[in-house]
Length: 247
Ligand code: SF4
Image 1 (cartoon, rainbow, N blue to C red):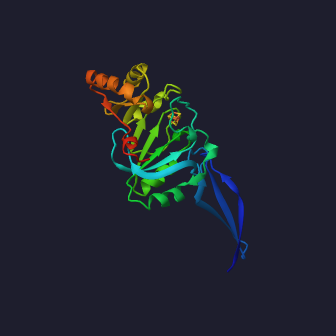
Image 2 (cartoon, helix red, strand yellow):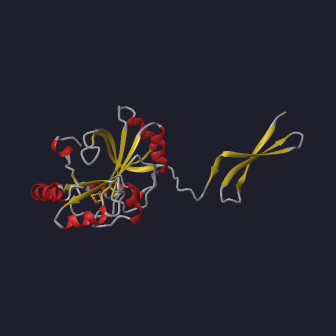
Image 3 (cartoon, protein in one colour):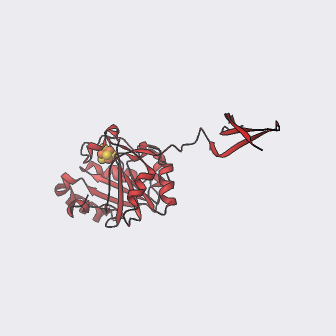
């Protein structure tokens, strides 16, 4: 018995979801309606196809903060409107200058390495919905780490969140309790107050780091050392990747 299949218009469900349906008309005249659950799409879902502007990606050592010295695969997304005057990756700011990549193609490159940690950095990665991206990497067994200024809403599923708040565009208050690590770049002495303001808003478990801005390191590091000695809840973070000449 052969049947003809006709795709019908999407069906709107009472809960706001939409699902695809098709009708099978049997020769007997009987019509069977098929609801294709696997194609259910929630229009309110934040999950978007993970096409992301990627400026660069490479396997290296994490140079900063709590995971300093560990091997990690870095994926640097393009796009940032935070505008730090001392930014060392200004070429990341314009997202349109960087090719769009999907999760699958990026993961195939990560898989060519023995990496266990994938670090999403920027730019400002939270300009994008990272839900699908992180779910797929975690599903494949990777630890997902985020480096963010916190200027955009938190999306994604993270094993580690490094929050580095910037004066040029302050972090959203709701992101602070999620930080595993607060890393404040010290460019001048007023940044110590900026650091304390945010340290008061993170969780008790959150690691606290002060990191000299690279071009001011010679001038600011002695002040940071004295500050940490006087306020031992803080630790020093150095950009060791720049000292050992790895990306
Ligand atoms: S948030 Fe990061 S990428 Fe954006 S301007 Fe500041 S340092 Fe540069």
